[in-house]
Image (cartoon, rainbow, N blue to C red):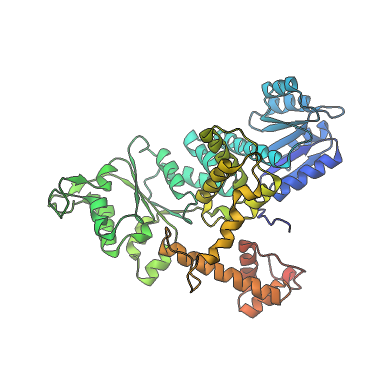
Length: 482
């Protein structure tokens, strides 16, 4: 079964090789991972592509031995006009001296034919990430604090947009609301905002609102005086006091009880708090960031979250997409986690098999980046050579999900918030209904949309979101405006 990937990236690779089969093979490998590919059959054509504003690539895969202008000469010319464009040299002979010469000449990396497909993908994505970081440093004068988002989250267009948002809002005193699924990287983005702010040298205090018992919320946020309740054997400053002069990050703020929401709103507005059991107001200076894996707007409409607090939190909103929505980042992050696991385990790198790469790309990643890291670390521990699809174990994890459910079809609750359980359950039901109706219509999305009484654009978007395979061609697709 072919692997379905989301081609959302505008990142572009130039493949320059005088062999048509090699150009075709590399194009197939990279396009499957969501990278746009342009080709050149010789060095002169490669330079034309590189220097043309219409086709300027983000990375170059360059054959060393080409007639006329060879790869080493192209590399020299590229470096004469740009230090930021990453170049990966490909050769038919694994010559160490040539590799050393290439690296000294400014090549990002070096691959020998016949190359391993998964290694080509890994090297290309590392090069793309490096190029994106260099580009943003050059065009926006960014500090490494912003560029660390590319390093920690990936080279996709989605992360580039988040980086731009962080750069835009960091220097302000705006409250920022980060919206995204659990494990998608909201805390990483929050930390980048803090590091890019004028408060960077002051504390960055994180409070996980989903991990605090309701009775202890106010003590955690505002602190308490000695003897204010049973077990309060000493005075304790709260998170607001600890964040004085710096940034307070409230993660999973949707879990904050309504009673505490009112006091939080007062603290934000007055910049004053009062410890539990205390009588004296305490002035605090902080910048507030918050994160949620659900819609606070919908919760406000339902009366489970204060509307005035919602508007106070969202001076600026950053949406952090799920890992399945930024497929371009998966292999980059997998390589990063694999490097870390190999160092931790003192185990040499054997890379990922092609089947393992396809499994990583096609998997839905309900646990997002956290799950990917766990899967890669476990696979590195189990593998005795190249990491295989079996070592990853992600098919087994997917198939166990229904078995772990209760009789009512609800996913197992242990270790998962109620909001996540409901969210996953709704998504799974939606996916199954769409799949079933599309089977009835023979894959015709227009007919399926009519049966489900939704518009065609909604149907098209949901099919794309869930990666549901369709057969045939919709008669109405050309008229549907998508």
